[in-house]
Length: 217
Image (cartoon, rainbow, N blue to C red):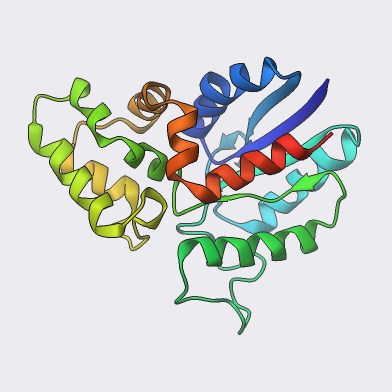
């Protein structure tokens, strides 16, 4: 039996871990526990400051050394104090995958705990939903929703390449196409409809994270 704590940004990611990843890995003897980051006393959700997140990661790593700790944070809109964001070597014009690898390495170095596995979603959790835009059809009568999302991923080349500007990030595109989209409700349900295998095939950075999870004893 192995234990993995997954520090997540919010309720959408928590539900994704609970409803899709937990059952899958429980069958392999791996037990995942999602934990939403705390932003201030009594408030949870969002990586608004690395200074507030780092103590939470360290505490999880140190309170249960026999378990593993990982993150499920969005690359998009990371705070300016996140490790590596202001370094001259930060590949600001590179692909999302390359930027995520760089920042994950910086985060790993900063946390410096043997049971920690850094992970950033490229560019957002919602990128996974672009694996099969057709799955949005059952939640809307507007055929243009599927067309718009399909066009976005076709233009980008892959779900994880849907870019991260404030107007064209994955979640922003979904909301523009489907104003009734409710992140915490629709997101996990659509992810479950798509299935883990399909998302892993379409999203290599996400797949690499799960491979790393599976490699942990």
